[in-house]
Image (cartoon, rainbow, N blue to C red; front, side, top):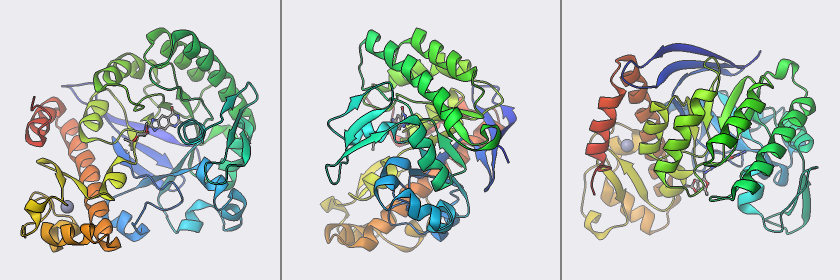
Length: 373
Ligand SMILES: CO[C@@H]1O[C@H](CNc2nc3cc4c(=O)[nH]c(N)nc4cc3[nH]2)[C@H]2OC(C)(C)O[C@@H]12
Ligand SMILES: [Zn+2]
């Protein structure tokens, strides 16, 4: 079956929209956050726990799984869902971003990218066709086109050449993947902070009729107001009746501000990454549980949270585990952070239903401390 999007309603107070994405492994309401499971696991979480907290779609990564264990092994296992025992939806990023952010000795040519394996140092080559072959073997519900995610900032001339090449690569991805009527391949709009180049990229890609579109090239170090400005003029260029996915965004303020601008899907390693160094997202802002002030604090991480961690364990206990580098401590912090973001997206969807996402933004920002100078 193809990936389809159902628009349920738009928020009268903002540009946000409530929708539902249908995939071969189930459907999910949007705006939605997607936990990242780069190496076919959302680090320290079991599939049962992900399901319990309300995760419905997770990410994995072409570049990483190509290197380890190899897409051939995943294919022999029956694909990613079987391999990792996850029955929800899966999206795989194409490797474009990882090659640019993880590897040195990169050489970008029309054909593809030459680079070094960031683990072994051996020379590798990734092309649009190769990225499609790997993703076909992995068998995710949604695959991403192979693109270049230029650094921020980037010169206009470089960005123009990069956008034009990424559009040519997108054509080759459409030809290279073997799914009927492009059922699961999303195009990725690039163009940096340049409106004219974002327009060009969106025009090229929407003419190729992908079932969904991502906005790439953001969350790469640009200030939040630059991201929001780019979203303001890019999101309206994407079709209303298809999913819109903002790549690499996972902080509470950016999730709300992206939803306000009509984004449906988000992913980021942030909640799971900071959980592994003991930083928690709470309704009152960030909490660094290693801090000595929590040594005898027997309250839950977040008194407004009903997650498994907050119902059963105290700050003092989690601080002890994290300081002792106990794995269970990182399981508890990861569970809470993912639950926090998934619940936040549920509140965003509810606010859209009630046409009050603008008000919700003000309340949340005030309580979380985003408005503090
Ligand atoms: C800049 O270092 C880390 O990057 C993370 C997410 N930022 C992000 N932008 C992305 C853009 C693209 C894209 O244009 N194309 C493709 N194919 N995939 C993408 C994936 C992306 N991921 C941030 O997450 C943290 C905060 C952990 O460090 C940042
Ligand atoms: Zn909690």
